[in-house]
Image (tube, rainbow, N blue to C red; front, side):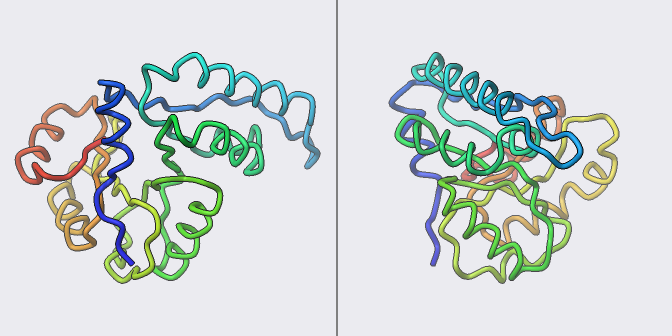
Length: 193
């Protein structure tokens, strides 16, 4: 099953007249020696809820990765998504990289938690083999940090892999302006975040 372009993302963007995506990377160590500090977890979750409430008219999407997952857990993330699923497009930023059937399973589970999309690595190949896609996929083709040399050297290969997998969008680090311009020329019809 293919779900197509990130329609929800663009509907919200047009409605809010915005293209802002918030990286919700609020984090603090809430686990000590394998035990969760429930009080601190709740405080971080409340801070996230307050922030999303405050930004409701400005921000289109919310990117959630491991820092928040380790701070509030997947149940906290599910609660957050459920509270704001009509207001935001939620992107799982766990940069998935595994064999196709494992990635497919993880994508299915992320959809169960309420995510609209997920960011995947593309180096491992095989994304084109995933048939049951109920969630949008954004392929990481360029990271923003200066040490992303392997991404720079393999940039065109990664774009080809992403196109072969027919992903809904690409992720390009905004600090790499020359790569951002290049990807817009090569794939003008894909969503780039």
